[in-house]
Length: 167
Image (cartoon, rainbow, N blue to C red; front, top):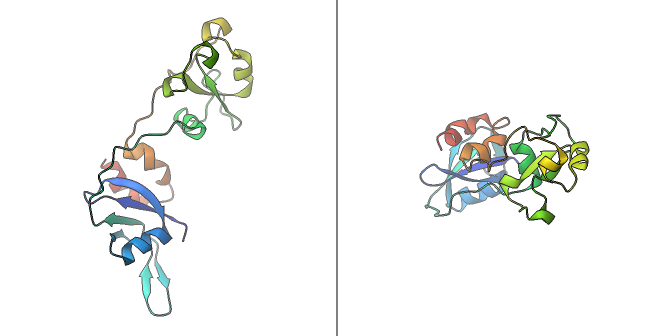
């Protein structure tokens, strides 16, 4: 009941991911229709309920375009879990401000990078030039496309690909 379900707007634009329990509830009260059943069925006492993989809402939901939130996990994902100073793939990464906050740096996408603890300590609270360090890649804000936002679920939910890649 906790498996992810892709939620599409009336125009088949991906807008959210919910769990199977929520998706079945939306279908049963008539707010959504099942588009794809890739997971089999639930057996109840009186009926057989399909387990949805993709649902489509019955009424258009107007909402602003999805933005990627600036979180530690998203910074690591953007930088491919690689230290942006030495290039080492590490599991104990930290977030480093390229221009330190105490020197006027902001907590924005273009000023934060993933760094291994050794490089973060070596750089300290200094500018890149002062620490004599270089960035492997210039930090940018990740795209707010449906593929970037929902694409990490494609490995376990391959049937979502036509709905995500179209946007």
